[in-house]
Image (spheres, rainbow over the protein chains, first blue to last red):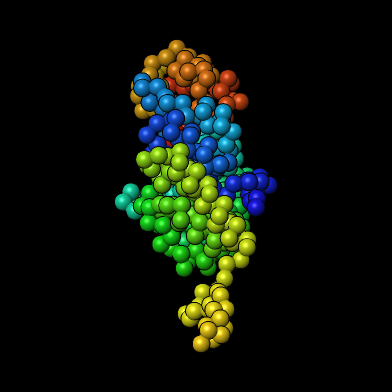
Length: 257
Length: 65
């Protein structure tokens, strides 16, 4: 059941984010209930007057692996800079590369992402790129040393689910690195569907954070991801157009007539 | 000496980066520091000498997806 990325083994195939929670208590309770072993963080310039909400301490206490992202970066150069800052701030060489210059749809820039990944791999980072569900780009990222790919299901925070499903299927079939479906997952059933289809993991943030009961939703996602993976490992049946009786009732009816 | 810290003008007597950081960032807080857009690793804060008009950026972790 476990998943290994760059030598680090995860028991849970559910990765989470820390954004959008109403408060820190709900965030911690939700991540704990989800069983997630890695959660994302962002960086920003400190507001020296207002002080800080110190998000690190409770997360460190929880024992989850912290994955900084490069959110806010508009090109490869800014993403590399953000990764180097995050390495200092969080003592990790892992980074989720996110380069989305357009604030309306937050579509990841494939060209800048490829450049950033190439450079960050050269600098010794474990790079997890957030990208569109583009099978060609996934292979290119794999070639330059990305340790996994993180194609989107739908726009970030949109809760639309696996809108990119046909392309995710191609990516999963072709990939030699773990495929983590990131963005757009709005309900546990979406997460289960991704795992059933053979995705190695999912990353969920908004759907857990904005639920009216984030802790319970975290648990729902945990169960969905476990169920989806179990189904994948058990082998789901073929889809077909006609019926195929589960019970031999025809013989039974014949005897009655 | 005049510095820009997160775009705000700051006049200081400190000449070493480590002293400046310990004055303006709470001791328990983990931050990353860049001078003129070059990341300065924590291990070099003590020896790093500040220059007039240096642009210092201090970053912290926040919630994000």
